Amino acid sequence: SQQGEEDPQALSIQEGENATMNCSYKTSINNLQWYRQNSGRGLVHLILIRSNEREKHSGRLRVTLDTSKKSSSLLITASRAADTASYFCATAGVQGAQKLVFGQGTRLTINP
Amino acid sequence: KAGVTQTPRYLIKTRGQQVTLSCSPISGHRSVSWYQQTPGQGLQFLFEYFSETQRNKGNFPGRFSGRQFSNSRSEMNVSTLELGDSALYLCASSFVPHFDEQYFGPGTRLTVT
Image: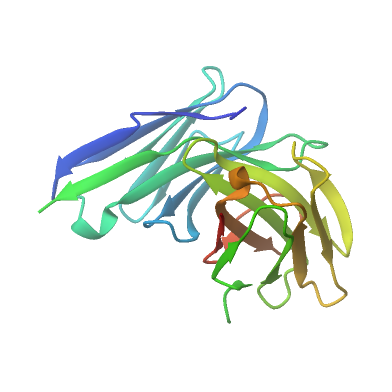
């Protein structure tokens, strides 16, 4: 079963708007990562946030992590058509459970 | 630096056959992980290799196996193919197996008929 649950499953917004995706997980983690996938291709790493961090920024991306609620959010500001893709959160467990567990993903569509 | 490469990119096989997929990690990366992606089950972890040793295995039947060579290149093998094995198989590499940033290849699209 998947560790991460993502919400919403699909999101459609206008270019220039902000997009927010949420991820919830079940067990303790070492870190949480966000990846992007364009149309059946390989995944591209976007950002990694460790369990002792609360917020991280990278360009137009902002990720938050709330370990008490076991949840994370990814915010993409000033969206562009090129941001159209599927976005996945992935959790890396604590020592002894070293594998990435992916959520089902959010399909983001940016309309011009 | 060249990225992660996977061969072949597309493959069509018949039920009952076996298949071998190959992955060449980024130069210097010693950890290779394999994932299966299907519309129904999403991305599922298959196994991870580091220094030619399988360190972790996902919940897949024994028909799925893999190995890693001394140059860090990895292969995965699926025997006695079933229709449900149709999927995108993704390989990812990283420098060390602590599940920091993973670099993914483009995947191999396997269709079983």
